[in-house]
Image (cartoon, rainbow, N blue to C red; front, side):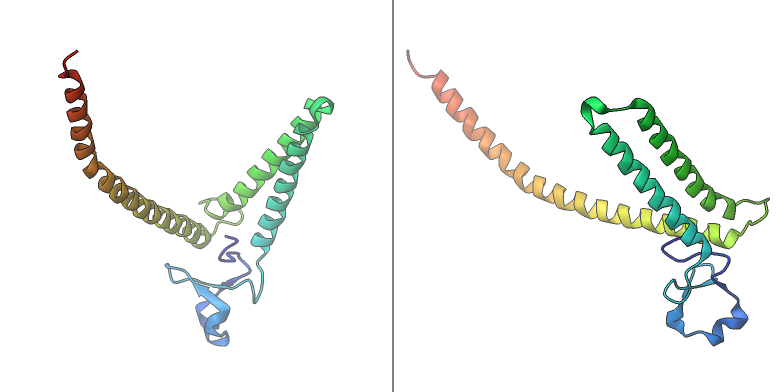
Amino acid sequence: MMAHNLCYSTLVRRSELGKLNPDEYGKSPTGDCFVKASTHKGILPQILEELLTARKKAKADMKAEKAKGKDFDPLTYAVYDGRQLALKISANSVYGFTGAQVGHLPRSVHACMHAWDGWATCLDVLLIASLIASLIASHCLSHCLSLPLIAAHRWANCHALRSRPR
């Protein structure tokens, strides 16, 4: 949502596309267009940014509290932990209510675009992981091919040692 500036305030009607330069908006796979953040930052991305910034601060406060050593206060730590969990739930709720079927602000376009972006990211990760796995496999295979030769050489030496007269 933040990466593509998805918001109710950034959705562009098809009739208004002619008024904008093509570099001022992005098009989703569903054909819907959203104004880019450089043109106008959406309300939902701003809310998410504030929630996530506050959560980072709460997590940093937790880490600082834990690092106090003897002065560590479990109650303060629990308060920071509760705060960061509440901020996490709030941020997830912003994503969730856009895809709700019933509610005050359902918008399936946002939910669809968000889900598509997540799916595309997963596919990118899978592609990178398979490339890395291929590289590792080819590297290991080149080493494994030389193992029988090394093993045969070691076995020959071991056999030679055993057959020596004492």
